[in-house]
Length: 399
Ligand code: 5CA
Ligand code: ZN
Image 1: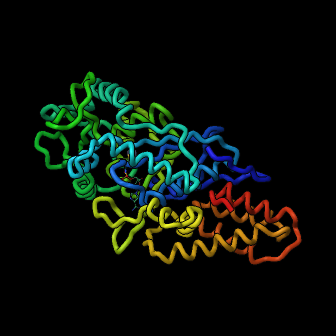
Image 2 (image 1 turned 90 degrees about the vertical axis):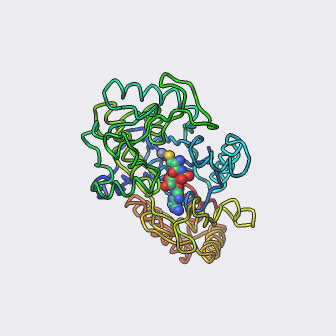
Image 3 (image 1 turned 60 degrees about the vertical axis):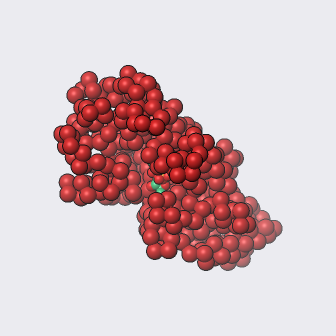
């Protein structure tokens, strides 16, 4: 955990857009704010889309911290899933070796981008005993049934099903099929019901639990890890917007059916999609710009981070190489300004930065406030040091 400077005064109450209500609402954490952010599926390197998502949630971490909260941040790593096994077959490597290597590279990229690490970083594999227990509990409540030897969760077991995404049934069915669901499988009670336990397939890894020999479905992994480490009603469930449905809807439905309480999370926060060459950056399409490739080509990670922060987290955008040049110029300007013996007073600028970030993470406005300070003239001997601290503490950019 890197040292984060403490700023004079106190951050404001953070308001964020909540997918479930469609509104920007204040977050209201207790002394310990609880956040779960879905982690990577480690079959390839971290691209700028992933980085944009994790930098977004890092701003939330920093804003809460600045407002006086401790932050309990939990993230999973989907270290067993179909894409990993497919990559292992395609490349002749062991799936575990791929997962270990790509997880290590992800953590290295996040550290380079100055993303504060989660307190609990939990793998799907290590969560299997806990997943099996939750599936048994759901079975006892009549919320799970078998199709052949596989187990499915009944979405009808959660009266609130649909409240995260707000989608109508036709949209749900369409998106479910696109994003890993199996609406067509014969024998399901409702086409939207999701797999929670898959029995062993030939040549695939399997674990022995009370449910039999097999492996967990995807959604129940995050339900189990979030409940184990944060409990029901935590402050934020987060990820990229492609996780709204089915993933976050199913995670919430499973937890709500299990505990017979609502909500799973107080806020559902989703970052926009980063594109490259005209399409959303995705491992399946292969149109990727890797953080590690930019780093190895000599890019300053602080400039990469600034390039990401120049976009509001809810606007889709497309990466162009020029972004990095512009961000490097800005970084140079900021570094030379804070290296001066004196500068403008920092109080007002820090207030603007806090106000911008507390208002649904308006990072671009916070960057403008720092630009403005750099353009000014002044005689405050504390100014440059305070601005450097604020840029570090609130934006995660080390000058
Ligand atoms: N392991 C699951 C979550 S449990 C997973 O979705 N992994 S992932 O590697 O595919 O994505 C990791 C995170 O990056 C997710 O929050 C996802 O929404 C986000 N993400 C993926 N592609 C992009 C993109 N092009 N732009 C922004 N965020 C993205
Ligand atoms: Zn997840």
